[in-house]
Length: 456
Image (tube, rainbow, N blue to C red; front, top):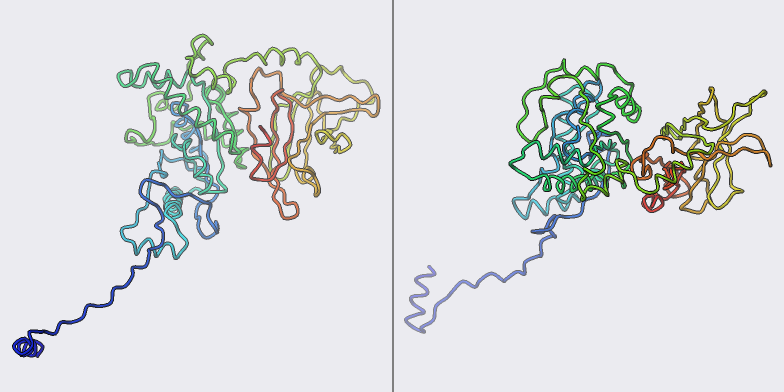
């Protein structure tokens, strides 16, 4: 019909009828994609952990390469409640949207790309844990040291075990693993890369510190300390990892070498002499207590004075439990003095709390409720000094709670304790024991986001 009409009009007028185009609609700008090319989006904790996370309180071993993580994994995996699989590398799993509609759909759910990746990571770990039949997952991928902030955001209830080794031994082991691939100098720089990442994580995250050298000389004590940190009983079967089957792993999923295949924890190599430590690794070796610095001489002099030498600190279940021994204190006559722990607010000697200490010979034990250290109205940040005391008035004996007799330098940097939360008014206060630069034990109180600045 239209063709006939156009032919007639064309003969008579030279004009034709054409269908008018549809009005041009201005394209609506799509919602911002979850990620722009070349830029990773910010990550954030789950809005509702009960809904968004299947796995509860996963354990991450933060450590450099060549530091005994595979051995520790095997030992922990021997516990009836701990599942420690090979390196999972979940942080390398990424999510991409195939279409703009997919991006818009996820934006409507308030899910950005990193949220989706966190859901995927959590599902992978949960699947592996369920398959194992156990209830606590332990993950030890060394590259996690470079992603500790995101891991902590993904699982706010995650627990961290920091495994340290002499940095020079790490470099030597890395070089010997494949001498054709790297020179000793290159191995030292690569070791520095990993040790610095581990140190950054250790400074920012609460956790439990263990050393490779202790793991290979006294594995039972190390495992007992980790079990105590995780709140599970120690099991002697953990040491019998050689009786369990462990299949071959593809390269990159774990260092399954002959010493570990033997099924026995073997003594590690001798520590390098100070002169053998490569220059790039000297600073981190000092920070980790493997090299002495000039402050060590002052500590030696202080060791001659009487003190309350701390041997154990257990922040858990709303308490800070402190165990130690009296050093340099003359034997008491009868009746025996009543010792107590004086906890004094730094700069305000009138703000003092006293807790009775139990003594067995020279060994003392005392517990401090963390809620007492964050009362309403206290100015934050706050620090509390600890003294073991006996007597009263002018005859009071005050012994600083310290740790100076073990020859471990830089305790402030290498002995990191977990913080505990205390609700005060509308705020959450973190209470955390720490060693000062003089190796004295103190307690810091600070709002959650500012705790790291308090300890600096």
